[in-house]
Amino acid sequence: MNETKLRAEVEKVRNVTDKGWELLKDLGFVEVAEEEIGEAWDDPVAYLVAQLDRFYDAAPSRDGLSRPRGRTSREKKVPPQLTDYEIERSEVFSEYLAKLAGSDSSEVKAFRVKYLLGDELLSPQQARALLTSPVAARWPRLEFDLQGIPIVGHSYQVEEDKHGKQGPYSLVRVSVPTSRNPWFEDRRWPKTGAWEIPEKPADARSNQKPKREIEMKTGSWKILSFPGEDGYTHRTLVKSHSVLGDLHDKVARLIKRYPWEEPDVVWYVLTGETPWVAPLTWQFRGTGSPLDLWSYGYITLKVEPWISASVVERVYSDLQHQLLGKDNKRVGKKNRELLRFVISRMKSDGSLPKARELVKEWDHANPQWRYGHDDTQQVRRFRRDYNLARRLLAAPSYELREE
Image 1 (tube, rainbow, N blue to C red):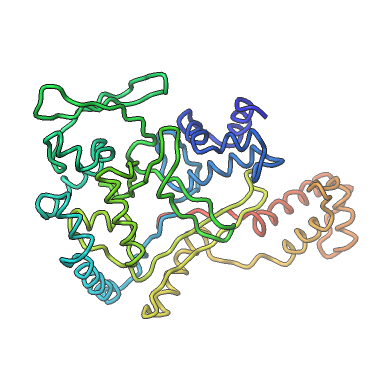
Image 2: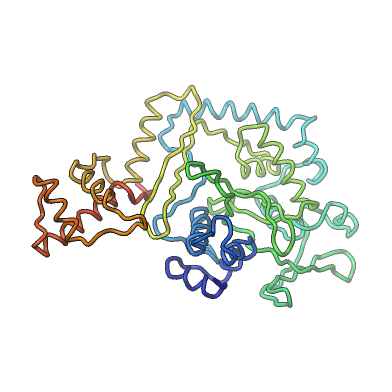
C-alpha cells in the first residue's frame, strides 16, 4: 500500500496533521507500513494508528498531533491524598539527597562551574532562557568562547517560516561583538514544547517511557526535558556536543543514581531547586484495538514501604472511581454468559453468524433469559445486549475525570 492510500485509510479512524504525518515518516513508521514488515505485517493501517496513539497518549493537544477524547498522559502523578506527614518526611529525604548530589566533588558542581555564572545558580527566567535557546542546543562551550559571548544571557534573533530544499526551517542569527553575526538553520521538529515521543513498550503490560534520543533526517538528537511554566513537562532537541547536550548526559547519570525524575533534575542542576522524591506515584496505561473491539487498562502504583496501607487504599479507590466514572459494580451473570455464548459461536475470521440464528440457539440453551428469534425487536435487543456485554467485559472505556 503506498503512502497516499495509507494516510487516507489512517485518517478514517484518526485525525493527523501534515506535521504529525511527517513525524511518522521521520521515525520510519510509514516506511515500515508501506513494506508491511514486522508489526505492520498484514495490517499496516492498524500499525500506523497504534503509533499515533502512542503520541496521543503522551501529550496534550499540540501542533501536529490532535489527541483523541478520553486519552490521558502517561506521566507519573502524585496523588493529593498524601497527608502532611508523608509530604514532610519525603521532603526531608529529598533535601538530604540534593545536598549529597551537590557536594563539591560532584558532577553537578562541575557542570555549574563550567557553564554557569561562576557556579552561581540561575533564576527560573535565566534557566528557561537557556533551555529554550537554539544556540545552546547546538553550540558547545568552545564556540561560545570563540565568539566572545556568554552561555547565560546570550542573545539571538529567530526568523520563522523559512523554506528551503530540505523543507521548512527557522533562521537563527546569534548576536556577537563583531559586526558579522553568525547564523544557522534550525530544522528541529517538534519544536521546544509540551510533546513526547514514547519508546515502544516491551509488551502490552509494560508502561511506556519517553525517548531520550532520536534519529531523524536532520541527524541524531538528544531529548532534554524540563518543567514548563504551564505545568507540563516540556522537551527540546539538543546536539550531543552542545551545552545542553552535556547537561543531558549529566542528568542521565544522575537519574540512574538517584530516585529522581529527569525534568526535576535538569531544574535542580540549573537553579538548585530540590527535586522532590514523591513517596507514592501512579500511572495509568490503556491499550486496545484501533476499532475499539477490545481494550485493556491498568494502574501502576509506586509506593515506598513506609506509606500506610490506608493511604494506598484511598488512592487506588479514588483512581478507580475516576477511571470508571462510577462505583465498581459487578457485571451481571447474564452479561457474562451472553458474551461467552457469542464468543463460542465466533468464526475463525472473527465474524459472527446471523443474529437471528444466534438468538434461536441462545433461547434453546438459556430459556430463563429467552428473547424470541421470531420477533425482530427482540433480535435487535439481543444484539444491543451483546454489544453492552462486550463493552463491559472486553472493551471498557477508561477516562480520567477531574473530580
